[in-house]
Image 1 (cartoon, rainbow over the protein chains, first blue to last red):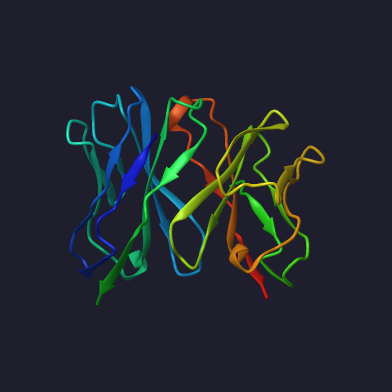
Image 2 (image 1 turned 45 degrees about the vertical axis):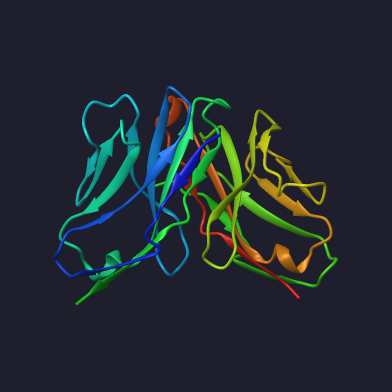
Length: 116
Length: 116
């Protein structure tokens, strides 16, 4: 079974500052992938970044980076230089080798609010 | 950029009625999913579909739910007799999965189902 935990229901960050959104996971799968999605108030789910369990380097995608600590089973999302448009819900998710990599399990989300 | 499209964007129905939610996945994707989200809460897995059959389903996906790929493009979710607790945002998603766990789910914009 896979489990994703996001312990921060809400976060505030000043515009132009960096913010870290926490995500820990639990799985017995030897191979898995971790994802972050953004959900603005309009409701759509937007894929942000991916980290594979065997990737040697932390993933980066523009202002998004993933602080992957495999031994601690954490995959925190770092947003640099926050913008007002970053205000949204952020979901951490994972997919594992069990079940043929098909099912993606989501955490409960963190609501980020960027303050001008 | 190709996208997953869902119709309708909003559906209101009376308790006990049947509803069909429609999705057109991205054309070269092989795996299709339905997720639901109640009032901005956790994104819950309902079902995955591959090669014209269900590959995995959750406890939520009981006998009241069914999925179908009636032709080469559409993917539908049917709820036979809606209950008040079925009110939620329903997301369709698709993925290539050819790269193992690294393929992200691409989500549609969702159908907001309101059962009265």
